[in-house]
Length: 381
Image (cartoon, rainbow, N blue to C red; front, side, top):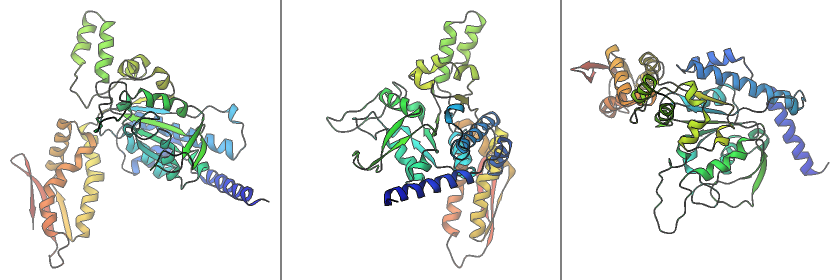
């Protein structure tokens, strides 16, 4: 056997073994596993993605292990997540595919890309990042997951990036990137450079996207206003007044309805090619997290990690319940979602940590975080 053929055969055998051993728990089991990892809220979105993930793995196993003709199976699914910042969109993808299913998963900031030939990264290097997460194995990468974060920023007219220097060119509308993504989200052959640092295609592989699932995620600020404005044109009387009342251009933590996100015309008005939106099997709305969910996240994730860190440094961290309510209330007021939960604690514990951490002759003690005069205070015993 020729050396190259032997290498290819060994690579294929490794790939088949990987696919055969891929975990494929039921959608209900995935849902529970996410809870155990600390994911809270978004039950509707969680169910939808768990089912999508189950179908993705089962489809791959049926094609590459059972030998089922892919023409007899449904095509791969692409999802679009629409919801406010801090609502758990990318965390859901990373947790489910990266930690539970252990599939190659690339989280990509789509705002760094531009149409081929313009300033910015070439969209084909999106798959380069996926290839890197798959240990440079094109076969493994070809069944992976790509999460396109900040997807709303490539809407026509939404990209406000400014490039310094005369003579630079930029696909400022984002429409070029949308066109480049069209074939990628479909089943197509893409020339993928092996290196992100240059645009040369001398070193490349050709990858099929037939089994790569794309999940786009974005806050879509102003989308609800556009949807309401379009609804106003078709409404009279009370319906029109209601649409006007709901339209708040400054709102961040908004809740999108299923009707709003399933209307392709709303995305077209926002600045997206309708054929690109049609490439997504499901558009899933995420809700802004309520106070109880935020408190659960704060207690199960943020505080657990901080308490462990202080314990390793020789201190017991005790946080009053009123402090949790204060932090959650502040996060809701600032519309930062789960992302803002750690900020207040980190800021208030900095002074104590700076003076106590890493000091070998310091005695262990108790650090108490409490609320005084509607402000967070820290005491050390």
